[in-house]
Length: 160
Image (tube, one colour):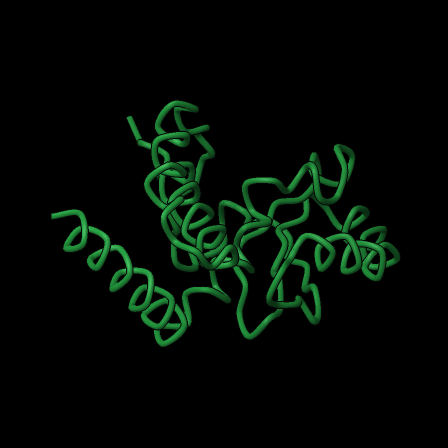
């Protein structure tokens, strides 16, 4: 009976990385992993005046509080790119674009739900790490844990 269970884990460990790679999720997960740790990546001062909106073709789009901060962050762009790319494992951000917040009289662009970070239960994390512990490839195990963590931690903000 253990052989059947072990074979299932081996099949999953062989299939899942291929699915993640085929769908392009590994790179996307890696790129977007900076969103929940934005303050840690760029520092409190920059995080207080900016927020990552999206990543398109390896370009990070940031909403910046005002034009003064936009100009200051232009000067900080190289340092920010270095800090961001140091956090990424399999991808790189090639540029940063800055946007000002939309004013009330401007037509809405496409409203995206706000994403909030909710730390997963440490016991659930431990259990999941134990489950994937049977996978011999360390990189695959780490990718699965990151995927699980982000799927639990990044939530759409509920509107009242």
